Length: 270
Image (tube, rainbow, N blue to C red; front, side, top):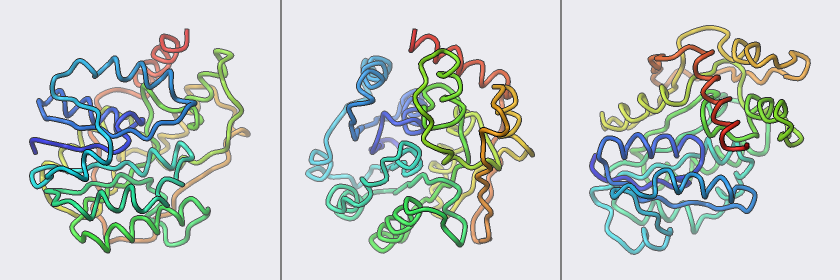
């Protein structure tokens, strides 16, 4: 894997994946779906990676008009879902065309782990399921990586953890409701290592990433002193078994990971 195109490159998980790829010397072309409410954060993220010679920011038109035979494309539906931006998945010209009109070496879609359930609880999940099915109808050999709650630097305030941190700083916005699942939680940097390893193995399929430990989300909530009454359980009951479980290697404790997230939030929002 020498070249990667990332759609939504400055979103939470994708941004961490992008930085890890650049650290490995891999060329990354990034497309961002911009929104006005993220403008200040986008500036910070562009400053963080913009000086890397292996990174370039492009448009979807640039990608559609170029040859992609030796490139991998990564789309984080997970990030769109957690940012309440799943309506972008309804734009067939923008995303399905990117998947179908190019000769990608690999196609990688990151999705929330709730999408492994047989019954979907919201319109957003139905939209995501429809998009994944349309993508699979175009290209059968797709990496589908299902992720639980991820925490760490740059987590959006649509996650309860980051919203709680910002609220303690008097910078919080009204919480829109719990979308993340509460079965599991993994530090994002550790998760990224597993994501890249799966991609580099070049074995398309369905993968569920897990911490391998119990009660991780609740332990995170407890560390942040989140009132249990404020968190309605949002557990993904997986009823399928035709996927590969990947246990993410944990390199930091919950306390260390969340402390990094807290310190980062203070620095960015001070």
